[in-house]
Length: 109
Ligand code: 2BA
Image 1 (cartoon, rainbow, N blue to C red):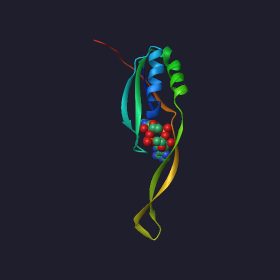
Image 2: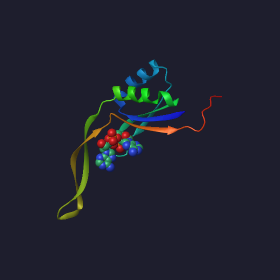
Image 3: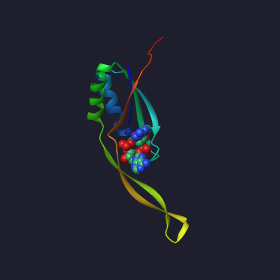
Image 4: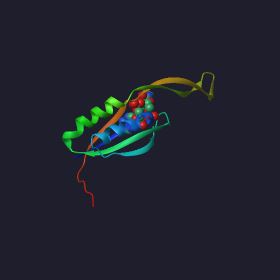
């Protein structure tokens, strides 16, 4: 048994969950926040048998698109180190960041 944790864009979340449900996967959606952009994203957790992991990753890959986002970074200004100037930086976010974890035990009681 494996536990998949997939961090994806909020905009892709419902499409991914629909596709997973259609294929019989149980999935839990968590509202999460990225530590770098400090913006909302979605983390899906899904417990599956090891054989199904490649199919699950394929579904996530198909439905999640990479996006460019602008964020601002602040650096000290030359001559006045006490003042900070924000400047925009473009980062590519996603499609999906996926962790595959071993599950020691899985029980429904
Ligand atoms: P955020 O932390 O908000 O990061 C958004 C995007 O900003 C990242 O996209 C990456 O392109 C960029 N980025 C992140 N940290 C950076 C840094 N220290 N310097 C420069 N650029 C940086 P993704 O890599 O696609 O990650 C999307 C989201 O997935 C992340 O949102 C975070 O919530 C999660 N994530 C990614 N890698 C992770 C990891 N190793 N552990 C835990 N969460 C992770």
